[in-house]
Amino acid sequence: MGETDSEEDKKTEGRRLFIKITRESLPQIKDKYPFLYLERGRLEIDDSSVKWIDSEGNVVRLPIATINTILLGPGTSITHEAVKVMAAANCTVCWVGEDSLLFYAVGQSPTANTRNFRTQMIAASDKKTQIEAARRMFARRFPNADLSGKSLKEMMGMEGYRVRELYEQKAREYGCGWKGRNYIPGKFEFGDITNKALTAMNAALYGILTSAIYGMGYSPHIGFIHTGSPLPFVYDMADIYKEKLCIDLAFSLTVKMGGMYNRHTVSDEFRKRVIEMKLLEQIGDDIPYFIAGDKNAGRGSE
Image (cartoon, rainbow, N blue to C red; front, side, top):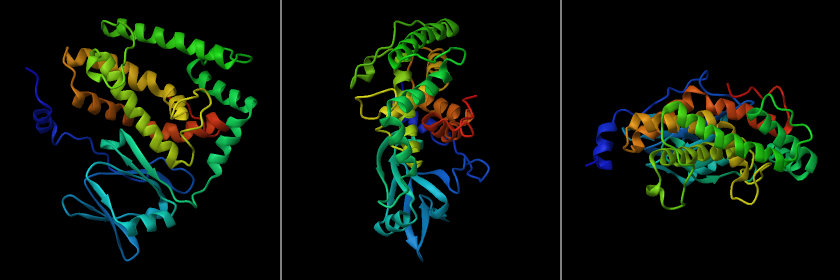
């Protein structure tokens, strides 16, 4: 018999991964720090400043004017007055799942800066700049290939072949059985362990990227490679990070979990790898590079 979720919750209680927020640990975008994640507490106003009251009654005043986006996780509430003050400071609010791994909704000020959104729109609406942005994204995955002159369809074909080979390679590397990527929407439980881990981590990555894209003033709905889906730019960006963050980890955890899928193990290991690879810092550098070719921004995904 496997352990129930409630039994697992009790065992994992106290093992949550907390990161101390310092100026050094936050990637800075211009004159603001991009993201602050909060859970199990309340945001309200005291003398026109926003304060955070956590579940143990501790009070922390937040420098809203220097924060780009607040990510509100489970167990949070926010007062109407706090929303007004944050809107006046152009601080975006996102409602997300645990540790910002799932994205639910966003609240943006109508006066928020649209510079990045306009840059994205202009690049995506012109066929030449759109394909150039797509080539920069594919070049990250094919650093030794000459992509000049390649059509979007040709590059997508190369990527499809690369990913199938990558699955097979990781299966051999970790000694896992692999019958191919298989996900039926709404029927998560029907997948094998590796496919379950891939599905869960891909969803978590989409949540992080959606929050980051909104927080930086771009739109998740305007893509350069993917089209006809709800969040094409999220999927464009996710493909940059999946190999190291999701695919490799899913196969390694298949061995570690020993035949029994454990969602706590998957989420804990995923969080650790997000931090180890400095994902938010990479996203902050990569997006302006891919869209506009800003070489000073693009640092790579080492």
